[in-house]
Image 1 (cartoon, rainbow, N blue to C red):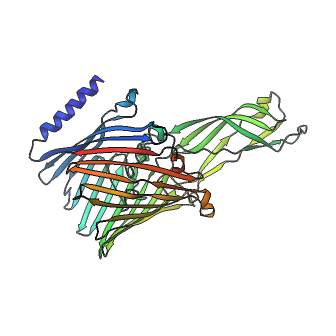
Image 2 (image 1 turned 60 degrees about the vertical axis):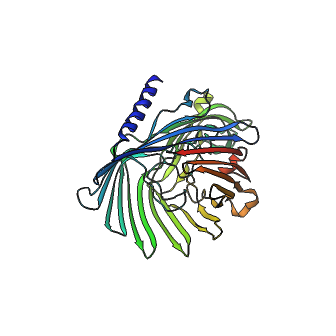
Image 3 (image 1 turned 180 degrees about the vertical axis):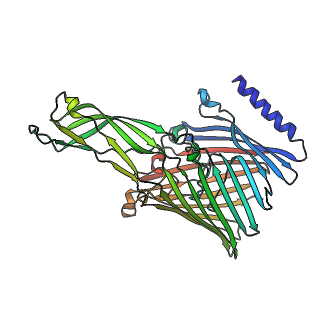
Length: 472
């Protein structure tokens, strides 16, 4: 803790001293964020964040940018309440690198691709940061090298090389199990005897009951061959900004690859077998091809993007069954089998996409609508759900107050049985701006629905929140 305090003081002093230089400056914000469960009054979120950003320019040739977070998060009585300083950005930009109109960026950086509002299917270079599940669009920074080339005023080409793999940041606190990899195990195991053994009155299948499940994560080796690559070409054509992109790298959400079964007990007469399963999780590798556009028609902003995801190979869950003869203590020629499960097929890609529009009416009411097919953690065509999102807001009292009474969305999991497979969210918000630097927001999040799905699991976590942000 003493070393942490010394480091914090050093960073602050360094930024302040260098901030006096005419070619550099420092800024940032302070943001307390508090959320309480509306049903039982328990704390759902308690975060206090200080972001310090330092920006130094070297004439017109280069620029150095940093962003460091200092935070407390969760229960003050928890030793992990005080977070270590987190370097969110530390990069240097070199302009006209080697040749004119070619810019180089090196270091920890955020590379945002896509045109949609916060939810971008083509934004895949930086892994998702889902620590706060309500902070849509937040990603972890990546250590990378990126090049941007501007051959004309309307054309841009980007190349990214990210040498190090990073998994996504899973949700924290009460949301920690929200996106844990789902593991479905067959409910029965086939039983048969090898030829030549005395026949036994064995059932053809034995019911399986999983007692315990252990997950073991297998990270890709720290190897240059596991780097990620991405390319993007952007063009402005007659009022429309269009871009096409390609990304090849690991996905940050793992899938089960091997399941090793240990029999705890079995009763062939009752047709039951109790087992423990040790599952190995691996991170799949995908080819991602993206397209996006944005334009404006008679004051209406329009955007859309789509991403085709292609697994680089077939991903199977291989199930390793034990030797029942050894467990019974006698060789009866019994063979147990559980078929492998298909997770992803190389020849069965899937497409996520989003289209949206926004418009500001003459009376000052702003409306933003989006239709999303496939949330960030949903994969394969069978898992993709539909999301209908809307937000209406208006500023009043000389724009000191912003009201958003209509804000939320509807999720449809199964159109064949909508009444039992849906979720809805209502997130009205009140925002007060006492001055140019301060924003005070409060509101509620109410969720309900039926069936399975990520947002249905949140319906017992309705909340009231207060967030204050002071920028300097």
